[in-house]
Image (cartoon, rainbow, N blue to C red; front, side, top):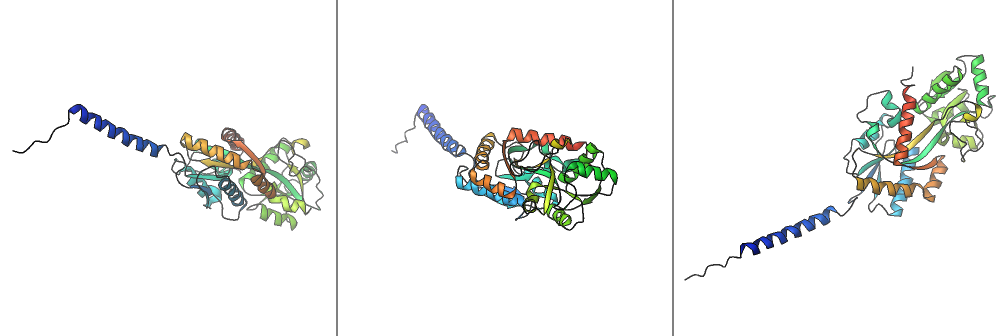
Length: 325
């Protein structure tokens, strides 16, 4: 006669099931709580390798990786094209988990959306930090007769439309237009692709004044081949303390370019908190600060909230001036 298998009491079976379930949940919870990040993070730069913002991004990534507080590697990826639109779009349309972020100039966030349709909402972006600022200035050849903004305005008033001003990208075209509005002077606008082309035109005597960033003009200002007659900051900049501000010269114009660390909308709080802390420490480090200064950039380190507010303010200021005629 065969013996029947002994059945466990239902209460014992249920306890066993609960024990297994709890063990499984505990294992899953441990996996879920490993913490962000669990793999390397991409830092997209919307300009090609070798550009000023690329150099800035690589210096920032090197600092983050050396400090080791992210826990994984920060890898720079170049996505150039469309005056920064291609890379910025790639960042803001990426998965929100926090593994694709970007160091982007403010133009695609504050200016371009007023002139053309973009596939993202810049106001919805997660802004993690403001890395650097680059003041905009007016530069003339070293032997120019214009010593002040007042001299420039007087010349333009005497010969309306004859004095040439080099601009081009929106971060230059907008303040050039605002300058005309504030002073009533009329210039002949000549568009260039950026600081290098403007510098060449100034040194060749092909234009009278150029709208540039301090970072782009730094080398020629140091060599005295160019001279800045006004810088569009609230106060004088310690990188160039001899350049008077527009405000000092009774022209209320402030205009700066920003490089900001951004991420898609809806980034998890844990990832946002971690990245904010990591970038905040890296940006304020002596190594990154020195690299930025060498490039002619002003280290900011403004947190995400302050950085986002500044972007919104600039966008609002530009809206009434764009699109340009």
